[in-house]
Length: 336
Image (cartoon, rainbow, N blue to C red; front, side, top):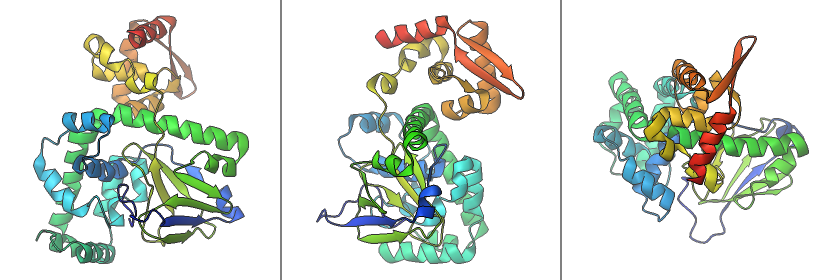
């Protein structure tokens, strides 16, 4: 990555320009799910930043990592300003944490060496263990994978329902505009963070940079922890990705009934009920609530027996929705 989310050029004049063709517009899409590896990198930046933002300040107090060894390993690889390696956020991360970590562990040695060398050139204080990692030492690579798992479990998993809800709200907003009005109008919904000046998408950026999509299209990835400016991969041979700050939810949705219902239902079940303010399948429920498929099915069964949700089967899918009682319970928690 060539531009971390919190580094803004002092002059305010540097910009990123992404050049589109007609074919690129047709291939531009919004990621369907939060990317856990991008959220790991960007949340670690936020842990180390001290900007006054009430939501993030509260999150920092709650989610300080319990296992500091993971933080010590990851921090040198993910500086909040300057370069951090592309191999830490592979495209496979959109398929889930384990798929993403598998891709990190499978990074070719040549790529590891090149990107770690670039990182070392900008950071003279890299620890000694970074050298065997750059050489592709299997033990070092697997320790990196374990650090990613530990950090995710400690820092991100407890907040995943809020992360997923914000990302999903943004995705629905963008894809709704794209479906109704077309891709160019959807790109205009990103203002002022991104500015569509056909055929170029422009953003404030720490350095002056041009990216030519050349018919590959652009994957736009909404992120909970991305702030102020978007982030792009440095290696233009990789599939073009732009990570941007997901738009905030409305205050009612952001605060949610979860904290008020958690003592009654438990935190996870309250999150499941909150997700079902819009009907969805068991698979979608698991993704949005940040739980496994079997756990989502189990929680849905308990809520169904309590009369709070209704479930209907359509071929191989089960669709869940709130009952009137469930809606009243959520509405009462919001009013409370």
